Length: 146
Length: 221
Image (cartoon, each protein chain N blue to C red):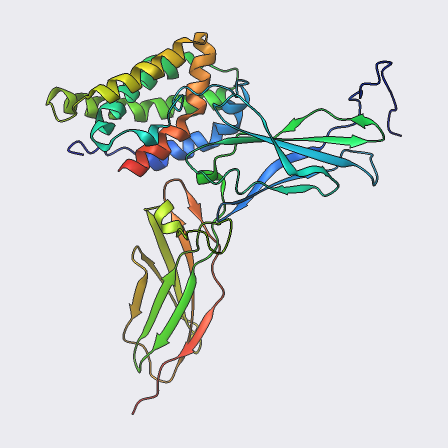
């Protein structure tokens, strides 16, 4: 869309790949997905993608990374480097939003409300770890959308 | 020695050692579940398999992999939607005893598959070689099924091409996004060998190099 985010997907991908098994193993709940329930991100209309990406970058920075402390310093370092990459995304998309280039339709608002409801349905730590474990779902969707 | 125990209610008592190393092996999204037999058990162990879509509540049994004695089960059809992620699980049975269900890690077909090398078609003139590359197809359930190139799955797919002058042993590497390459300014009447690999930047995936295709440039007229 009008707001292209020069985000180092490769860096985030490799950071996440390094800790994916560790993080996902900490999430025992198979029956619920934060991002994909009840509908996959891939079902979002193209016109709503920018707004969803904007909301999700805020969501990960404000509600996920800060609640994902583990006892493993290697994992913690990877999480903070991923978080830093997301900060630049958050800033870029925030500017787009302010310049009205990142319109939020009703569908994206509904979709993001559902994501928040899925998140708030769990305790904070479980919800944050599950969201982090679903980062590849977000990355797959963002790459497909670019 | 395998522990033998049986509860009074006639219910199977799951004290059999567990299947080990339960994992998906995936090539071009042909997704096959593999495992190793429980430790210390000889022949006669049978298995059953179930799978689930991440985020969806229920486990689904795989009838074709019920009471099997092999240690693999093809779940390609069940995991063909690469926008979803999956878990699979295996249980072992022997002499009235059973093991626990043993699960895979979360399987993401898009990032966890291995990509096969591209197919090559090579032709030559006096001073150039033309190479046409074809990415493998995503696995499909039947020959009549709709074909889908991995190029559609991974829009950022690129090719790394290697060209070797068999006489001088000089080698060139090219990285291209489209599927054709013409290598100019070559020596007439000389043998060149070409091989190629697929490279996806994100998610980070790459195939092995294909077999070499050797061809000679035409002789000077």
